[in-house]
Amino acid sequence: MSRSISLIPATLSALSFVAVLALPAAATAAQRVYEGREAAALRCANTLALTAVALSAAEMIGEGEKNVMLGITVRILDRHVEGTWAQKRAAMEVMRDRRSVPDTLEDYRRIAERCLVQFPIN
Image 1 (spheres, one colour):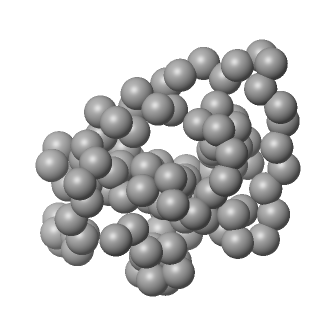
Image 2: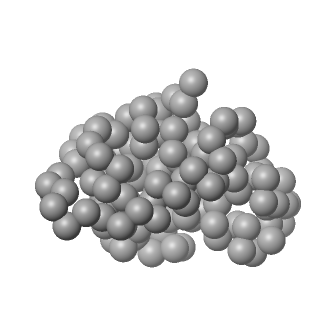
């Protein structure tokens, strides 16, 4: 299996992603239901983030490539999903818990390129 993966540059680091998504969801933050285009953006962001972590853990990509993928995830959430970061984080947790790792990796194979076209980060 090839170890290379095609990624586009992102300006945000994985530390930004981790810092944002590691914030505890505020107990007083209003629950938000995402539908349509925002739900699709959340699915894309979840797919990229989980795939980055899985490929890095399997040593199929390096730390730099993982950071780029996580940066893209933050940009998608920032530009294409409304709400507070606590709401986005909670939605990402729901998305993560609904999809198995194998299903998410298959999503990556099928939709990653389309995600980057549908939800541009520049």
